[in-house]
Amino acid sequence: MAHAAPAPRRMARQRRRPDVFSARTHSAVNVALPVALGLLYGLWAATNRRFGGPITGWNVLFGFVTALVFAVVFAVLWRLSPRLGRGPHALAWGVFAGCAAGFLVSQSNLSVYSSAGVGLVTGAGILLINFYRFYSREDPMGLDRA
Image (cartoon, rainbow, N blue to C red):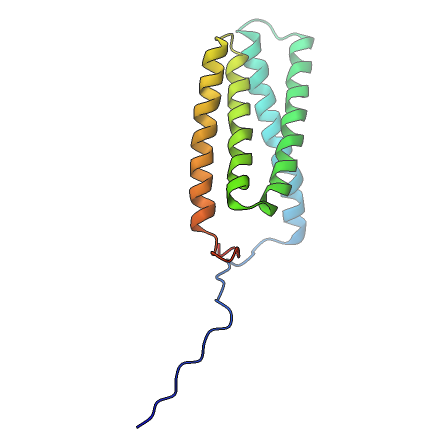
């Protein structure tokens, strides 16, 4: 008795999570998330720089400039980094997180070695976590299976 051979799979099935939000919601989040994170980061940096003293105009200006720079860099990285391979993608987020953490520590009047150490440790941790995440969720052919 002969049996039919199984047909080869032409394309692996990709499991996609259903998209429950509308395009309008996604575009609103694309703007709101960098702005909200930037304002939070700017407030944190301005608070570290103040050393518990009074709030001045220069301190407020420093907070807003820091928030603007953080939001722009975050938005560009968030938009462009998925186009990179898993290694450069993880490296980009690791460098960003390390620089952000090191800058916050440097505003709190600690030594340069402390801020560099915190930045390196944070960046290395984010690099490893993201590399594992991108490596485990990507097909060997480069297709995303998240």
